[in-house]
Image (cartoon, rainbow, N blue to C red; front, side, top):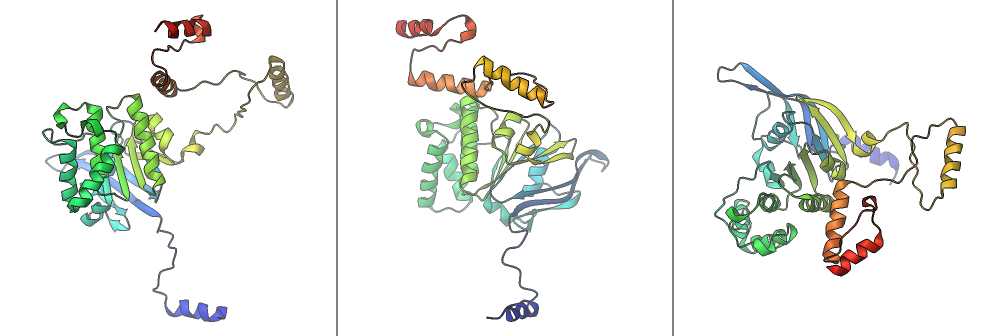
Length: 330
């Protein structure tokens, strides 16, 4: 078919949307969004949000980062339609946030999990499955999947009043996923979790992104945001202060980092001389350090593989022989 006929067809039907709309990948969009809380008399009390403009794209983990009172939870409530904006607009799935049917495609884990303490995990998930009008067979399948996913197989028939805060948090995440949502809103998801539970939660969030889910994570835990988020918005006192990819925001532009293994002291000295010769400054040449989280998790996992063995730090003035003797005695 000649190219001219294609052009004519488009001109005759200007109301037909292109196959790939530039907005098609935007799941959440806020436009000049502001929220002012007022007292009983209508007087201005606090400006929780001030002209917020962000976009959350399909298949990404977007972090809302900021100290307490910066407007993170208010933003989530506006997205859910639980609050109405003072000015501006929120669009979710190209619909106004006040359109309640959009919530069928959303999973929400609030900062505090308000669950019925006399129900078991299975009963809790069954209750929320009924709210989404899932069939009995579908509820049973989703409950089994989610109980395994959050690691509560051994406690699924206990009442929630017997759960620790971390276990309750896992149930809260499971209920947020019961409807297999396209968009997941997580408000402080690692609250109450120990380091192992925190790592498991972050791994789970990453796996949900790999399944094509879009995730908005609200947190003031810097390590959580750094480990899992693709992009972040940093809020302070209701204002957007920074927005961008985590990898770019954290990069120190005027510092070059080189990783190498097996270098001798002579090689390190030679490298330092080359750097100085080219006008650079050598601040340190040393072994890299890990994080306390990774150290803790590695010790726990090693302990599970080798019960009774004790990991001894070289900084304690001991050696491998002492560590081996400790393992042998136990």
